[in-house]
Amino acid sequence: MSTMKAAVVRSFDAELDVTDIEIPTPGPHEALVEVRYSGVCHTDLHAARGDWPVKPTPPFVPGHEGAGTVVAVGDLVTRVQVGDRVGNAWLWSACGECEYCETGWETLCPQQKNGGYAVDGSFGQYMLVDSRYCPIIPDGVDLAAAAPILCAGVTVYKGLKVTDTQPGEWVLVSGIGGLGHLAVQYAVAMGRRVAAIDVDESKLALARKHGAEVTVNAATEPHPSGRLQELTGGGVHGALVTAVNAHAFPQAVGALRRGGTVSLVGLPPDQFPLDIFTTVLFGLTVRGSIVGTRKDMAEAIDFFARGKVSPTYTVRPMSDINAIFTEMEEGHIDGRIVMDMTA
Ligand code: NAD
Ligand code: ZN
Ligand code: ZN
Image (cartoon, rainbow, N blue to C red; front, side):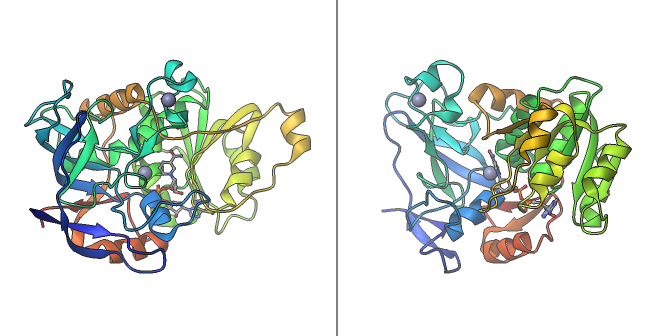
């Protein structure tokens, strides 16, 4: 039996255990990937804490922004071969046959498996991927920089699409963390004008660096929604909420222009009050958005490969995972942390 190092969740109230576990064997449609880098998403922290109503079952290995090289393939694999550079994703696999899969909404498939949640993920030196669903990473791009695209990038790219905004219109990005700092860049690349809101001045500086024209600090501005309405000449046409704080959600709704759409993407384990009167009279749309399809993923990777978006990230060893989670909880991370799985 050969083993690898991995960061394992043993229970929702304990630190991750960086330990030796068995290297898995690929099934017929699966590929074994030697993981070189893995981004750390706030979802991994929610997973490790059991924050959400549907919980993963410990022990498990989190991580759904893993990037590496295929080292073995199952008998029925045709889409990738040994030596190819691939990643894992939150949408690890879907059934391919239900009404959602058939209509371009595989992200809503009730039979889907989620990477680093239902299936062991990329916080290990090796991982399995479903060859029919794994993102393919083009030659010539930096693998560490590619990792954050595999969840943060595709999620905000899709979330921006479903705001139904047009080039030249305003979008608000709420929460300028791993997801949000990429959302600013995708929105700019898609021709939108960007407003940003966060509770931390350094995050807002990052948003401006990546092209936000207008920023509001929700911790110091007494009326964030009204201020955003003023600064955008009557409100934003669309908003994408990535913040991990329930207060950010009604603030984003309140910043919308009449007829505007807010995409909810952040997943704090809370509720928020939705004002019925303004939602009805102003014709607002409030919708959820969950990662992206394989097609969205290929498009999001293509924006990155063409240099239109460029993640801000810091490389750290896997042995830092518990410290990284603490820094994430305290809001001290600039962009993304990408773990070097060989260090
Ligand atoms: P992150 O920790 O990197 O960033 C969160 C950001 O929110 C930080 O910049 C923080 O300062 C900011 N914030 C906190 N309180 C705020 C407030 N009141 N107003 C505005 N900003 C505030 O997290 P991340 O990795 O970017 O993930 C964000 C959320 O998105 C998580 O809940 C994660 O689970 C979720 N997520 C959802 C999807 C999806 O498909 N829907 C995909 C990936 C992640
Ligand atoms: Zn994620
Ligand atoms: Zn399906």
